[in-house]
Length: 65
Ligand SMILES: [Zn+2]
Image (cartoon, rainbow, N blue to C red; front, side, top):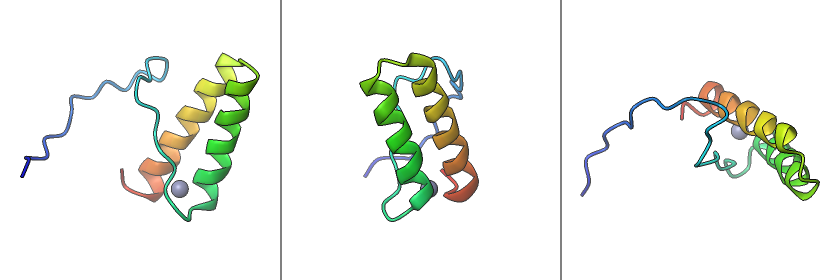
């Protein structure tokens, strides 16, 4: 058992050490995750960050992460 202490808000979109993980069965998560994957494949750092930001925001709104 481990207490679920929320981590302090380090919400700098450019300091994403721990990218959000797509939620199973969610089309939007899958889509944004795909965007991020292709950005990574193309070494497009800004597109990658953008996809992470969008994925995070989507998860916050839709999945209450
Ligand atoms: Zn989702």
